[in-house]
Length: 274
Image (cartoon, rainbow, N blue to C red; front, side, top):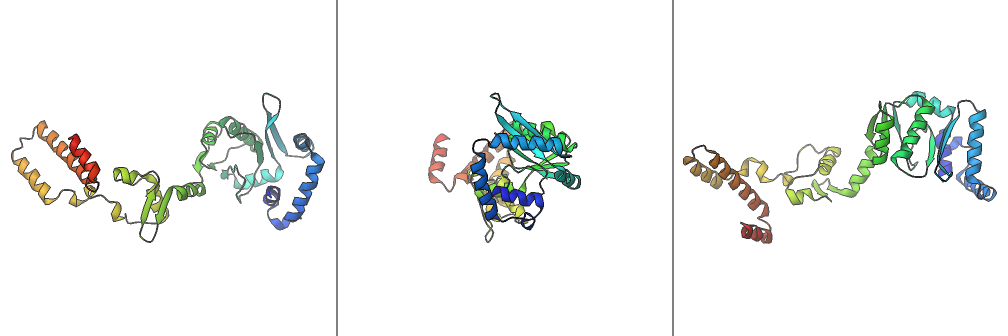
């Protein structure tokens, strides 16, 4: 239950809440019967009363063109006290599923750069100064809002979010250091993509897997037969631009032949095009 988890974040621990999860569920059931369809009005009135009568309590709201509530932001003196101690790094958790110290809470109707910008301005108004570092997921709208509103803060991406996405994008077997990425860059071009490099670094793989090193990147890129051919051609070379062009063409042709050697159909198509 999100309300119970939110109370745990505000009070510091589940034991400090003063109620069980079942108590919260029963209380919510009773509240739902009492509130009915007036939930927004009651929450709005409660926050405004706290803002008027409670010292250092802040709240703000935003309405849409129809006059309906679209965004809501609030925080209290406890949150401000926490911010004085932990203002060096903050994160924005859109799903409220983390175990971090909570500074403030907000409800927004959409995840746009405009909504996030309003939220960041409200945050800065309540806490006066910007954080040093802001950690978020890979939401492009949040990135735009941070660059515009928190001009002195450094924006960083959450490593947990990155690893979660990598786990669905890259398959890695540590026992034999086998990699497979959905972008298929190695299969198409013979080069590992940045996702694979990131996985290798995370798992502490210091030696590059030999199976992913193409021969063209090693000392064996030029065989003895090819070297002999080059040496023979060089005997008649006069160092002209023509010779350099010929060498480039031969090198390109040999590269594609090596690349397509395991695929007879592709190799036949390449021969036909030549």
